[in-house]
Image 1: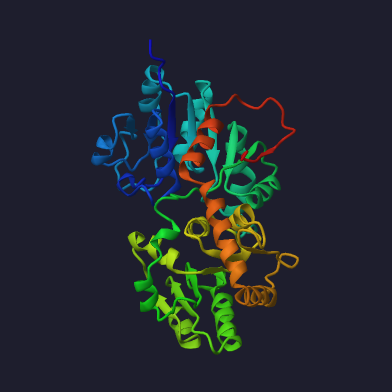
Image 2: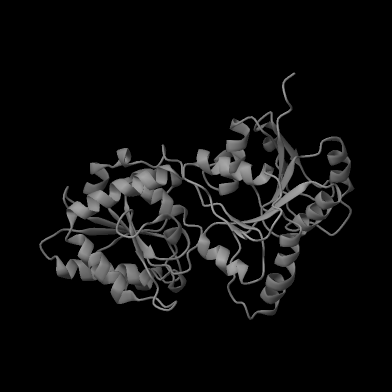
Length: 391
């Protein structure tokens, strides 16, 4: 008799674009599990009619009293799911982020003795002195953590942040990458010509919001100093993003190719056609662009936080610049990039190592890590409170 495939329930309060699976981590994980033969239950107030036809092993469940236009579910009975789970219980439940529907499902799963894992990938700990933020940090997050076998975060840096809130059983699951879609083979001489860059010129790249929070001005100032130091070179910079400071930055830093929005279908070619990605954001967020650039064979330069700290070995697979007591050291950032520009052999070596590192973060590998965390027995001891992936 063929054994019954494992079933994992996914709970999310945000729409899941199943027809655009390359856009979100959750979609990649769901696709990977379905490809490996697991059964998936998607529980969300934003289920669409076409979602039910996405895959035969995917079951879409939504509260009957919630319409797809409702932003948050009401605190009402969850009997619609209770009845279903009594007949079709999952082996484990993943709550993608703390929410009202997540709170309901976590209570139900604990009542039915179903293992629960919580994710904090999209959660930031900004504004700790705000009363609502304080309430979430010290009441909501610990409650979800207490009901969960693991709480997943995306980097060692964020694990340490959440550990300061006395959260236990933290496990790291880094963002993955489609290493076939993002690859050096998509380097385009035609695109580089549009940027007016010759074969041996360096193309610098910045991707993200054009605002002070993401420290974009340091990236643009770095490139301006590079042009001053190498007047005989035709190094170029491409800045992809938009924001309220966009017009001011364009006026302050001319001679840069500004692109307010690049279709996702063009990103592999853009990354592969660049040479150095400047990411001076010190917050260290999910870092999709970090791992995608590395897979494309690009040198990533950033501060030692989040995805940069997680994936980059300094001077081997990129430049990971320590923060000076938590503060951005702009001069060190600029000096490191300037020194690198004088070492074409070093750039070539880092590009190769970046690609090799990204291959170990392919979505297939990340999905297998996720499944292991979901289905493995609950830890019996709190001694090892931060679990890192084994390579």
